[in-house]
Length: 208
Image 1 (cartoon, rainbow, N blue to C red):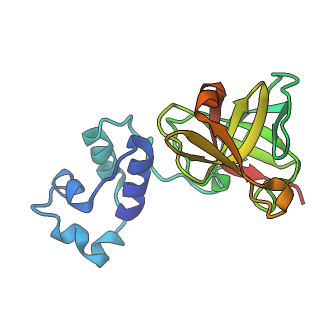
Image 2 (image 1 turned 60 degrees about the horizontal axis):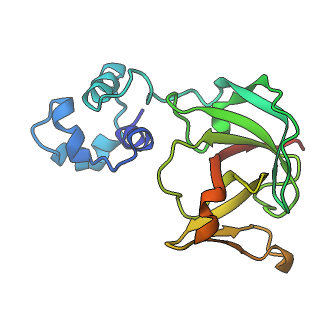
């Protein structure tokens, strides 16, 4: 794992910015000058160095080591749960089964996060998400909505998959399909408490 990749993995886990200078003393360097050097950034970190960094940041050992892109992860799949990329869908069942998902399908993966897989239905998020895609959901742990990320959320007893933008007094619900019928919707301040974020879409599986 490169230092740059390690920083990206750290930031994904601890949810704050990490600098090259911050890692310097952990790796036994007197200053951050070497870390700012392009050649040093391309050097592979040894496993013991990764462990030292994780320990310094109070992270469970091995949680930010790089995974082989061919590795698969066992995740709960809900075959009867549909997130609507359209007008809304009801949850018919909470039946689940385990499926193997390749790590390479994740936009970002962390062993400290919880994931599940549901189905997409409808075409309002096309071409990003198509009807019957299987969606990898990183479970919501609270915090702020990250603007323009795609979320699965419940609203008035229905499940939706849309891009969200959070303003002070409203949530903007956006589709990727440019068709005028999928114009943005607005959830006003008085209705915000009715929105339950299930998680962020961090990958998908598509059958061709």
